Length: 286
Image (cartoon, rainbow, N blue to C red; front, side):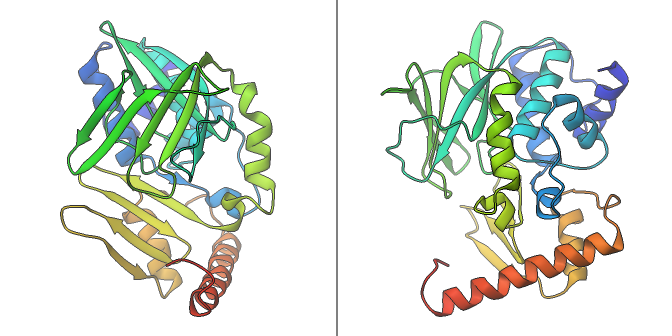
C-alpha cells in the first residue's frame, strides 16, 4: 500500500499528521477510529460481503465505509504498522457468558508495544473501550465505563481476557500467539454468509465516543450514555433511517444504488416486524 492510501485514511480519522509513535498518539488514533469509522454490516446485509484483506479495508475506509472486527482491526493494524508501531494481530473470541475462557476465532484482537509499554488496542468491538487498555492485570475506568484485563486461563492460555459489565458480549478473549490474516478467513466466510450468523440476520451499526455508544439494530436507534441514561427510538421512514446512518454513524451511502436502498429498507423492515411480533409474544428480550 502506498503512503497516499494511508494519507486518505488519516484524513478520514481527522488526524492527517499523528506524529511519531507514542502512547499519546496511539490513544488519539484509537479514539479517532472509533469516532469516525463505524462498526457496520451494510454490505453483508445486501449479500455482498467485502473481503478482509487489509488493503481492501483501508480503501473502503477512505471511501467512507466501515466494517466489522476483521475489517476494522485488520485495516487499523495496517495503518499502525505504516506509522511505525509494533503491532500484533491475535486470534480472539467474544462471548455472552462472562465466565467463558475459550477462543473460538470470531474476533481479531490487537496488541501494540510503544514507549516500553504494551496495550490492548481494539477498534473492532463496536462497544469496546474508547482508549487502549494496558496489557496487564487490573481494573480500568474510562469515564463512566469500567473494564478489566486479566490473564486467560484454561485450554486457550496463554492469552488475555477483556471483561466489561455492559453490552451483549461481556468478555473477549485472545491468545498471546501472533495470528495471520489467513487465520480469520474461514470464520469471516461463516459470519458473513451463513444464514444463522447475526451479521446476516440483523443490520447493526455502532459508533463509540468518550461519553457513550450509538447503536442501530434494524430500525431501532439507541444511545448508551451512563451519565444521561439510555435513549431509544424507532426510525419510521426510510429517510430517517438513511439520515441516521450518515449523520450519526458517518457511513457514506454513495455506493448504494436506489435498488440497494429499497432492498435494505425492506429487509430491515421485515426483520423489525418479526422482532415486534416476538416481543409481543414474550419470546425475545427488549
